[in-house]
Amino acid sequence: MKNNQTLPQRWSEFEKFLRPAHLAGRSTTVKIERIEMQETWPRPGKSEIAPVCYFSGKSKALILSNSNRRALGEIFGDSISDAIGKTVRLVIVDVRVGQESKAAIRIRKAVAASAAASNSGVAA
Image 1: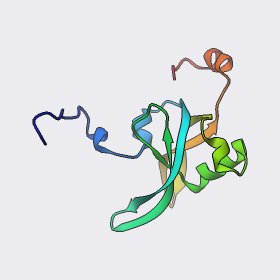
Image 2 (image 1 turned 180 degrees about the vertical axis):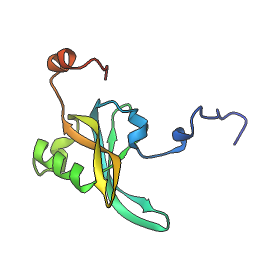
Image 3 (image 1 turned 90 degrees about the horizontal axis):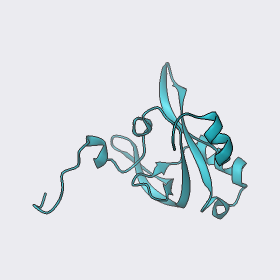
Image 4 (image 1 turned 30 degrees about the vertical axis):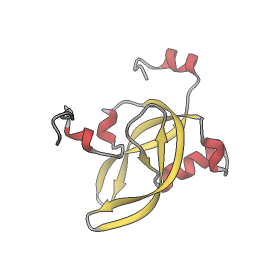
């Protein structure tokens, strides 16, 4: 590390992709900036090309699972370009993986600003 570089404050700042722990148990509303295909590493020693969603003003991108790709299709239609510039809500859900329950990020339709303010105590 060069002397002019600042050491991050958290280990998670070294990570490129969004994980449930980064959301700290809260949902958040984000604007889709772009979606591109990238090499990802779902398991040690295994790489694959997967769609990755980047959000405006956010440093971490979300690798799009099958569930999240289907959700985007249901919200915005079959054209990927129709999702660009649109707003979605990221939520944490528990999913079953084999015999375990794990936290996962899921994409949901964004709630209108006035409804969100009256229904949520969490600031986005």
